[in-house]
Every structure is written in C-alpha cells, then in structure tokens.
Length: 186
Image 1 (spheres, rainbow, N blue to C red):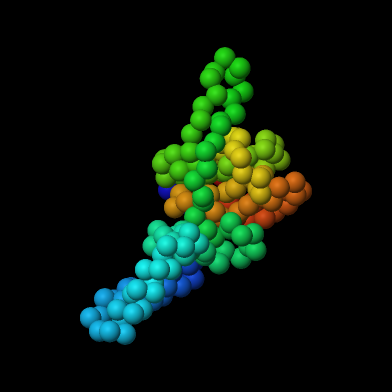
Image 2 (cartoon, rainbow, N blue to C red):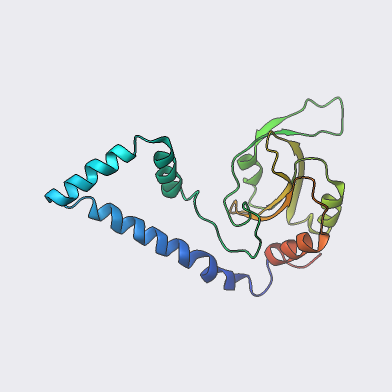
C-alpha cells in the first residue's frame, strides 16, 4: 500500500540533507576534540566544564539523540517537524467497565502507522481524519501537556500537524497534512 502521494520521496532531500549536514558538523567537532595537542586539550577541558551545566548537557544530549532535529514541513508550530516528545497518556475508554489504560505516546507508534492523537476530545479533528482510518490510528487520550489539543504523527515519530490549545480547527490544514503523508482520502 502506498501511503503518500507521488511526490512524497521529494521531501527526503528537503528533510534529510540539513540533518546530514548537522551530523557531519557534529562528527567533525568530535574528531577535532580528539586531537592530541595542547590547544585541543584546553578546549576539551573547557567543554568538560560546560557539560556540568544542565542546559549544555541537555543541548548535547538532545543533539546526539536527534531530538534537536526540526524538519521544515511548512508549518510554524514549534512541534511540527520535530520528533514527538514521549508523553505519558491516559487513554479514554468509552466503555465504563473497561479499566482506563495508561501508556506512552511512543507505544502508540509501534504499529508503523500514522497517529492522530486527540488530547482534549476534539471530535471535529477525529471527524476530519475519518477517511484515513485505514492508514492512521486515531486515539483520544489525556496528558499533562497543555500546549496542543491534537497532533498528527508520522510513523517515524515526526509531528506532521498540530492543533494549538483552544484554537479553532482549520480542517483544511489537517486534511492537507493527512493527504501529504498518508495519501488521498480512501
């Protein structure tokens, strides 16, 4: 089954080349820090001191884990184009006899399908995505995150669309993102 439109592979260069350039830069910096000369030793000592600072440590850890990557997907929301942060979720169950399940957002991506994550019970977002149910799982859940009402997440964990908290849904943008990443409506 082909998930995206015919031009989906064209996004590879736009997305991955800047990431590859950044990786090459990081690799070169690490190699430079391994040179056995007095100047590099001084630089290494200063770098080691910086790593004792929480913000510097988090910056380097995020960079090494790829969490600092932001693809340009044509949306200004700060989460769009980034890897979805792993969130603790309480799944909403319509059946009161079923125990409410707690899971993590990463667990919901294990099937290798897209995910529309509805965090505040926005029926209009679920309705707009209904035509993609064969390719995109829709899950309503609660979390402590307060900056978004809903997220569309690609199978690779990248946020493809976000609905900011309390904002009216522009179904056109959600349908466009669904069409781009998961093909046209079934």
